[in-house]
Image (cartoon, rainbow, N blue to C red; front, side):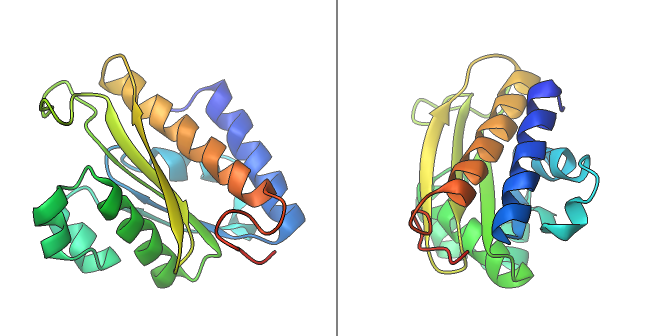
Amino acid sequence: MMDEQCSSLALRLGEACQATGHCVTTAESCTGGGIAAAITEIAGSSGWFETGLVTYANHSKTALLGVSEALLSAHGAVSEPVVHAMVQGACRLSGASLGVSVSGVAGPGGGSPDKPVGTVWIAWGTASDSRARCFLFEGDRHQVRLQAVRAALEGLIEEVMAPNDGLMGVKK
């Protein structure tokens, strides 16, 4: 699922993490480990990458990340509250200083009027705080997933490089 852009972004992320002392984690659903795969393609990533979790099924989100069943029932897996809970749970579990979570509808089926194919929620954060963004990617399943990996890596770089300790007050 990776391409040159993913490799370049992962390399930039690694350089930024090494410069700032950050360690990252991932909690992935629709990307199926693609973010972690891009990161671990980089030699030396063990120095700044902690854990990669693929929590594709809702029960995995609950069991591994602590996402409540009530939250999943109320909002669905592809939602802002769920990706916030996923990234915070991944950071708590791993001890990483920064994480990313992704949940979306990659297609070709599974879409709805409220959440069409290509809808992807991504959150970046810490064990206690996060920010999220909803994307509507175009293309087939592979293209949607690839765009989600790129967006996740770009957001991690932004957070690591943010002045004033980033949006979440992450200590560098």
